[in-house]
Length: 39
Image (cartoon, rainbow, N blue to C red; front, side, top):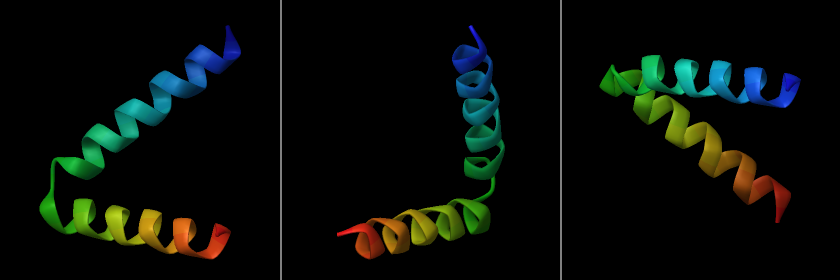
């Protein structure tokens, strides 16, 4: 059940980030960087 809470909290955070374009771009850049670093 705790995983569900974490998941919902993450979704809420992502929704807030995506609601402003600068935050969304920053988030996408971070994801891209993490993906590139992990490969």
